[in-house]
Amino acid sequence: MRKGYFITFEGGEGTGKSTQLALVKEALEQRGIKVCVTREPGGTELAEEIRRVLLSPRNETVDPTTELLLMFAARAQHLAQVILPAVDRGEWVLCDRFTDATYAYQQGGRGVDEDKIAILERLVQMGFNPDLTLLFDAPIEISLQRMRDRGALDRFEQEGLEFMKRVRSTYLTRARVESERFRVIDATATVDDVRASVNLHLEPLVNAWVSV
Image 1 (tube, rainbow, N blue to C red):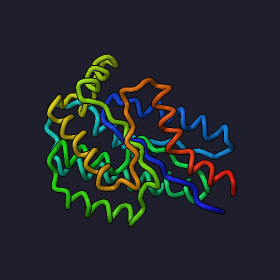
Image 2: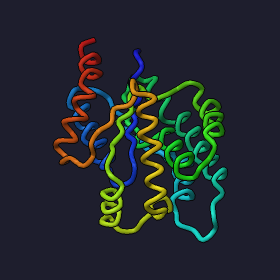
Image 3: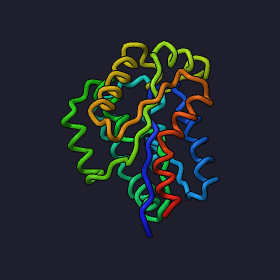
Image 4: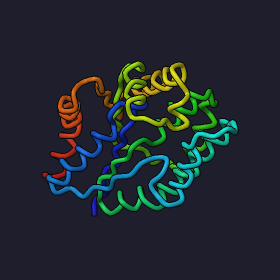
């Protein structure tokens, strides 16, 4: 059995990546492709508990290293229980955020040393990386307004303008450095236009898959 693809959906808050992920799932299933949809942090019972710890606003200051270790603890469980088994079964795994988000939020946002993240990445992923990463990008002012429109903010969403600027900058830097894996999508366009851009980037993979 051939292995499936691992496709990640990245971007700051309010960029519409979750909406597009659901649309991609629907489109792939219409083509007869088995799809596994998941998210980070989360994806398993244990990882979802870690997610609640990470995202819940709290009075206690969370040390950046603690935050980083929790992210990768959730990721290790997620890979072992969900992502790798699904890929091995020949499913396409669509994941709302993955390790690029850790670089963006913990390195860019928090200022954690990149080497610390890279060590944990090697330990937990053992060379396993996304086949394709779709980065949904929008100016921070638009993202912040969309977050406010949604209502209550989680712990990361409460960090404010400068934090989000650093997150966005780190994402875009990674996309430039790893241009073969990344596709940057203008998230300020309409939902239909963004969907068309996403489909354009996915079509070569889909056509190759269904033609076999």
